[in-house]
Each structure stands twice: as C-alpha cells, then as structure tokens.
Amino acid sequence: MKGERIRYQQTGDFHFLTLSCFHRQPYLYPAAAMELFEDALERVRLRYLFVVAGYVVMPEHVHLLVNEPARGLLSRSIQALKLSVSMRSRLRPFWQAHYYDFNDWTHEKFVEKLRYIHRNPVVRGLVASPEDWKWSSFRHYQTGVRGTVEIESEWTARERGWQLPEWMRCRQSDSPSPVPKGEGPWRVAGERPTHYPPMK
Image (cartoon, rainbow, N blue to C red; front, side, top):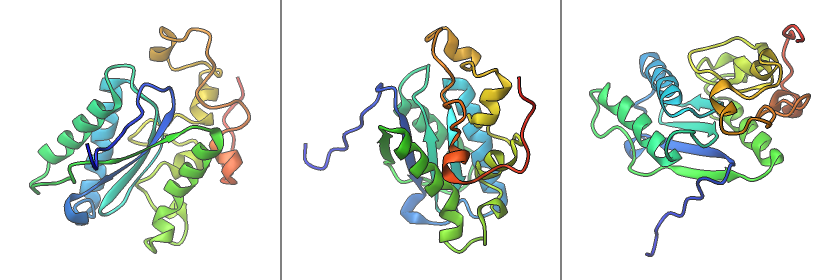
C-alpha cells in the first residue's frame, strides 16, 4: 500500500524512536507533563521488559533509544506508552497517530543517536549544555545517578558485574550486557562522567 510505514521489529536491534504531540503542540512543555511521561515510560518498561538506553522529553516530542521488549512487540509497548500518557492528560488528542522508528544496525549508529538525543535541548536553544536539561538520560551517563527511568548504561552494567538484566537471562543465558564493556556510550560520545562507580 502506498505510504505504508515499514517497521523492522524482532531483529535484536536497538530502535531510535520519535513520538510527536498532536500537530507538534507543546503538550509536554510544563514540567509536570514531562515528569508524567517519565513515570509512564518506566511503568511501561517494567511491564513489557525492555531496555531504555537513552531518552529526552522535549516540549512537543520525545526521542527514545530502546531495545525490543521481552513481552510482545515494540509497537504494542509504544502504543501502551502513548495511551498511558494521553489517559492521564486532559489534552485530546495528545499524540500524532504514528511514530518514527529507526533501527540502529551498528554500535556507531547507536552512539550517533544517543548523542543526538542528549544534544537536542541544546540545539533547540532550551539550555546551554545537556546537563542543564532535567528530562533526559544525560545526567545518568554523566554521573551514574538513577532517575525516574532506569537507563541501561555502562553504570548499570557494572553494578550487575556485566551480566544481562535478570529478566533477559532466561532468554539468552550466555550473552553479555547490552552495553559493551569499556565502551559505554558516554565514553565514545565524549560525555565523560565526573566519578566512577566502584569496580566489581
């Protein structure tokens, strides 16, 4: 069908996603709305069991860098995320009907998209540097601090001794952490943390 969106799911790739508010309206602009989105993202992450490697909440859209869920399809988890946010908001309709989905085929693409996510508020002129924007995964990569949304990073991988998250071990018992040891996205992106967690 002409204009049909083709999505490549169940490939084992990370996905760079963009969800836009209806007609690009700044429905996420108040801090409360951004925090609502973060809460919804963490709830859906736990329900569908997927990894969040990065995210940023902007006034009129959101970027996510996630893997494919252990429960159901990625498209179903994104539908649940959008529904969770819209049901808790008085704005109707809240989201555009579709979302953008790009498969990160390589580690280089993964890093490129993560850097794009973290620099988006700076490029838009909302803040002077990525750490000044509260509603993204940048601070976690910079300091290892845990926020509302659990981020799969070199920090969290080290805490687990470079093992997969518990819920992933039943599927791939011999696989390493989703984050390559010694090559966390912050290292490649030049976004070095100010301190290191204790080595295991």
